[in-house]
Length: 229
Image (cartoon, rainbow, N blue to C red; front, side):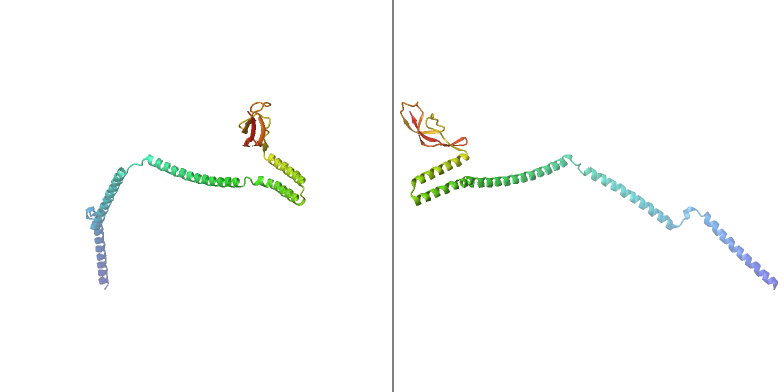
C-alpha cells in the first residue's frame, strides 16, 4: 500500500509541474507577440481620436478665416462721426439754455409791464393825498361864510388856502414864472397881444394874462403875456 501511495504522489507532482510549465510558456508568448497584434478596439479608438483632433483643427482654422473676413468687411469707424455727435449734443444743450433764457426774459418783461402800469395808475396818489387838506380848508371856509355872511373873513380864508396850495406845489418842484418887465422868450412865454409903448423896449413883457409854471427844469405851461411891439 505504501508503494501505491508513493506512486499517486509522484503522479500529482508531475501534473503540477506540467501545469506550471504551460503557464510560463503562455506568458512568454504574450511578451513576444508583436505590437501589430494589439486589440482591434484600441486601434479604432486611436483612429477616432486622431480624426477628432483633425476636425477641431479644421474648424478652428475655418473660424479664424471667417473672423478675418468679417474684420476686413466691417468699415472702419470715422472719427468725425464722434465729433459730429458731440457737437449735436452741445447744440441741443445750448438750445435748451436759450429756451430757458427766453422764458425768463418773457416773465421779466410781463412783470415789469405790470409794475409800470401800476405806477402809472397810482402815480398821482401821493400828490392827491397831500392836496386833500387844501380841499378840506376850502370846504370849511365856504361853510363858515354861509353861516355868518362875513365875506371879509371868507376872503382871508381863501387867501390863506391859496398860500397853502402854492407851498404844497413848490414842495413838489413847481415854480411860477416871473414875467412882467422881462424880455420875451418864446421858450417860456406865449405872446397873445402886442401893443406900442414908448416907455419900454420892443419885446418887453408888459402884462401877464395867465401865469406860467416850471416843474423842476421843464416848462409845463408857458405864460400868456402882453408884449410891447
